[in-house]
Length: 152
Image (cartoon, rainbow, N blue to C red; front, side):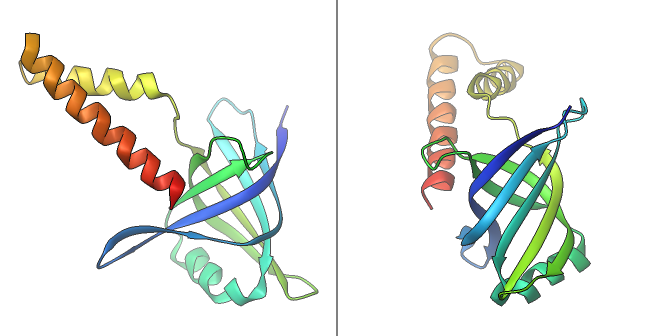
């Protein structure tokens, strides 16, 4: 059984010579659907201004996965990352377009990150105080990266 949520904000990753940036896409409305298929598949439909038509048509033609940072249900909820590609763009009335994305939600498990970091450091042969210091440094670096994604 699928589960539907309101999409309240959407940012899309863009890379340029200065690194990765997240562009806020102003929404008129939006919907996020968890397909509940056991494969972590999600659908996202956003209703946005037709001024973005060319950008999303190009993304659909390129058929590359995009990184989206979305907020579901309430603006105060923690944003989530979605790796998705544009599967359809439809021009609507009132200078709006419907953009349909299909993709997978990225894990928001902070302890999953900790396990990964710890495993990598143990594989490097670290232990004791060296392990603790390296883990702490990498953990804080990851947290800072996540914070910069959600605040940009």
